[in-house]
Image (cartoon, rainbow, N blue to C red; front, side, top):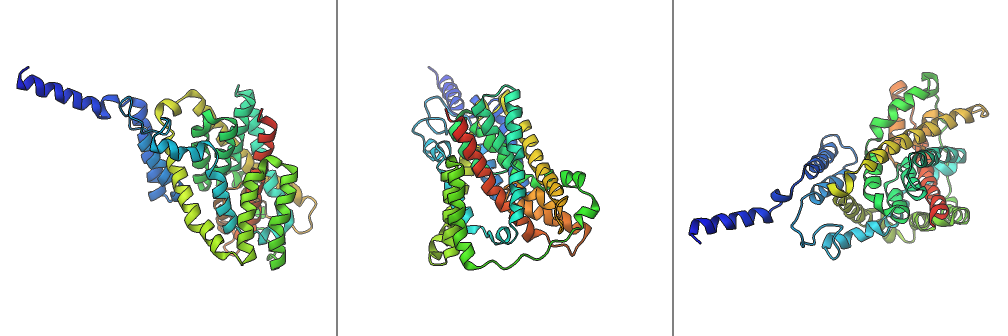
Length: 382
């Protein structure tokens, strides 16, 4: 073999070991989607703590490798496969709930308990989409996992998908986190459509001061009530209220501070990256993924509308009216939905401060979506 022929053969072999020789159109499309997520996070500030890890994970997950090289999340024994077990086995979501509990102040909800009903009403999107998915031919387990997207709670969606429909986990997780990031885009048109200017101008009374005793008793009592009603929610609800107890008891501040800072940041970073890396084109670009995204959008819109319409219904019987915008915060995208409610309210009245009031249905939505997931899991697990 001549030197030129030898070099040509080696060059050809070298090319085959690169990703260029195996790159498909679908991989290139997914890489562009990952770059779009990164752009939206950096340029538009859409949930950067979620979209940067997810976006970069999408890019990583769509670089093809040679057969026999175990590097991806679906290849047993690879590093990413081990990290992905925290997603596929539902380990990471409860840890995130622990951190959320340690960050969350339930005082506004406790000062005005009727706002809890708005968080419950927003779960209409979950069960409405469940029925819609069944109609489109998804199995009951898959429908339950898709429906929870309406809660706008990424960890809950991942947890339930890992239990009911692991084959759809990547698409459901991406849909849930995408809609969470797009809360400032999706919710305002629905809010304007369903409320009048007069309703948006309603001011809420300042919340009462909640005692330390109430704040300590609440996570214990709320856990017992929720767990007895929906035992399937024990893992998520238990970690949420455990984290909140660490925060409110004040004698375990080191633990609470770790849970709401270093731990939740580390878990969110790894979870987001692994979810993104799971969206390789051959797994993600399927016809059912389009259906999941469409149903997810319908679920989120229905949840938003359900909260607003229920607030208007409550006003038929209340002497002190509720600003219906608060119903949009019933989805559990904390604190983005509450922030959007405040911004929309201030556009009509710059002196109308709705943020603290909106946090009540917002944190109630976190509890509601976890309970809804528990109910669906217990009913569909077989």
